[in-house]
Image (cartoon, rainbow, N blue to C red; front, side, top):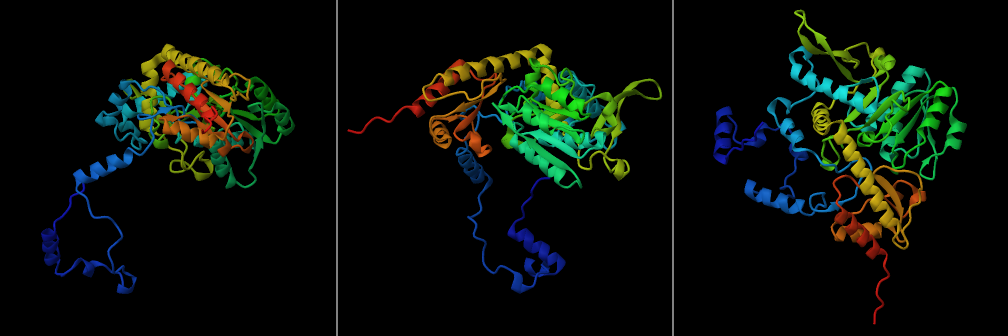
Length: 453
């Protein structure tokens, strides 16, 4: 809806037409509650002046267009093929959302169906939903689903899971009577199996684990799977979809629920959203899965078509049987992921993953060789790794920022025991000379200051 301003003369004519002498006469606000002075705001700007002002303000931001970024931690700078934006800008997709009159939305339903199919293919699971809000809420929905399936109220989550994800899971479970959430410590960058063994019992609904985890490390999923399944609980895995180009899928790990953040598949960083969470599970658990599922069908004349096979929100079924009362689908973002996967294909996804793997290991080896720097975790990793610094992390980050580099995430923000540690992410977009620039700047940051004469 466009904003159409009115002139003072037009306002006067409108007031005369309705028989009042001022706009204030239209307000049913007692004089004693009114502000009898102008607001402390700058003078109004024309559209041209406003554009100039906003551009000047935007130049104060450090973004991936103006800076070399090695940020990760859930939001990743991957290459997005132009195909994705071309499809998304088509007018029929601009307002993609939940198809409330499903049979009239065949095109949208088909895109969701294709998205679901591709999520099943990359995760190795049997069924996938039409998407959820983001990776964090997908993991929380996985915890709720596990509790429904097992009829148990205790959930274990590793401290190596993204801190924001853990907070969202805590928030979801905090409103459920009897629900208990217990964090499992990590050791050497991965979930402590000794601690987990002591916590898993017949009351645990699920173990929530991230692979690769927040530190970029690969977890010992086979051991976790054997442990939780031996007690009748479920394994809920949060995964990086790009990593599935080279790593074993949740299906191969015998996971019961696979979730993750789909931002890295064709969606920009966009200041943190909107993103898209994916959710997949085994076929026998389909009726406990949150959200919608689009299925293929035929109409009365035998023609192929698509329909909403399951709608498990309380708007559609009895509240006590609903699997989620807020879970919808991020249709436009899910479409971006579907177009991305269709564009790169199976071999392309593997190539992207291999480039991430190679580039990150190259960077990690060079940084670890800088005097004073070290890699505290010796386990395998995918595209993110942790570096221990010889000086305070905020000082390093500030110095590199002045030199046009977003060097990583200060882990001391989330883990007291990892003070002065950085989480660095390297993807397929980083060239050798950019990695060399990061290494050079980190080396310069640790170099002793020249003595003053």
